[in-house]
Length: 93
Image (cartoon, rainbow, N blue to C red; front, side, top):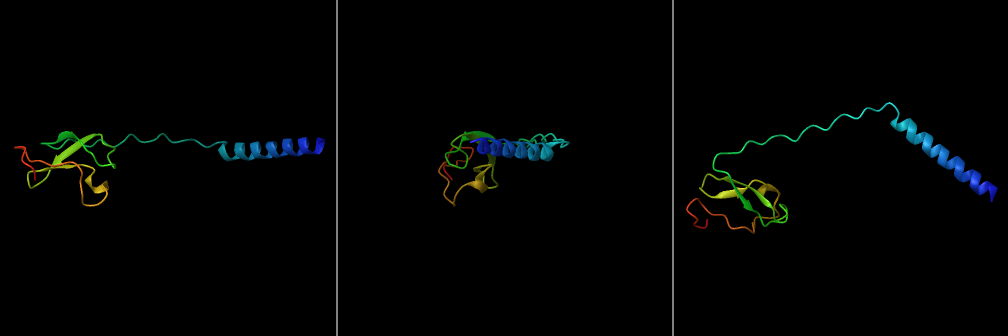
């Protein structure tokens, strides 16, 4: 019984010393602030019903064809976007 306790104690001491040696003197650099993304003129905020966006309100950036596209559209799965896109007059595109 004593050998089990001594073995456990020595094992815990070794693990503790290894952990201390690994972290001693290490200075953690602060994380950089997230990059600021400027708002493009004509941007609107709408709910995006794609799972990549988590069904949250996201920025919809105007596209050259007059419609708006979710700014995270590149992360959506496949070509099908579940939210209808409309132009400025409200007609479906």
